[in-house]
Image (cartoon, rainbow, N blue to C red; front, side, top):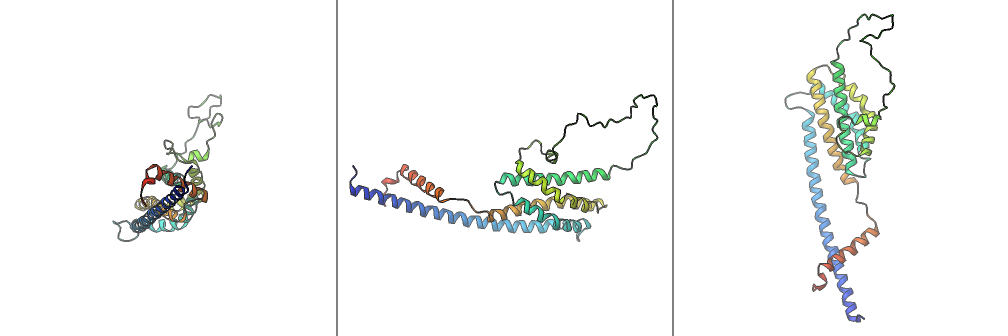
Length: 253
């Protein structure tokens, strides 16, 4: 049986170990916090500078019509994207998926708009009808039988099939894009000049990317680490056991 003095010494040793571990962990947290604050401040400065730089292209001394239209559009869609992006707080994978799907959807919708612009005028031709019932080679069968129904969310991911992206992020992005899709089309269709269209498209993608970076930085400050008393107690016990296994029980304190 352990003697009383030995028991007291062991209890004091354990208490001292706890205090040392607590001090070390506190210092580590303080250093980590200082580093995070410094990094976040630097990121904000860089993001702000990049957004301002992206707003006006270097080669254009004055704002183009494309930039003016884009500014009005961003005022409408950025608040929507921010709200939906910041609702995804479970994991970075969800937000990464949201970001990838929104950017992909913007690219797709502009590509479709350009295709429609380039379609040209359809030429009407007289079509001879075979009264004997023979099939004309120009006949186009539009019978939907046999066609498989495509999930709109799967169609929304067109172009990202080879990537493994979070489905929750995709679903939220799908709903979010429906809110802003018409705004983007309406703004883009105001432009006829090829250079205005190019500037609008390039700087739309650039600004959306930068705003996503900004939202991610802000979210890092807004969402605290989740912990419980039970977790802290268990974590402290593991630290003590680890210290004892490392041979700290033989250290003179």
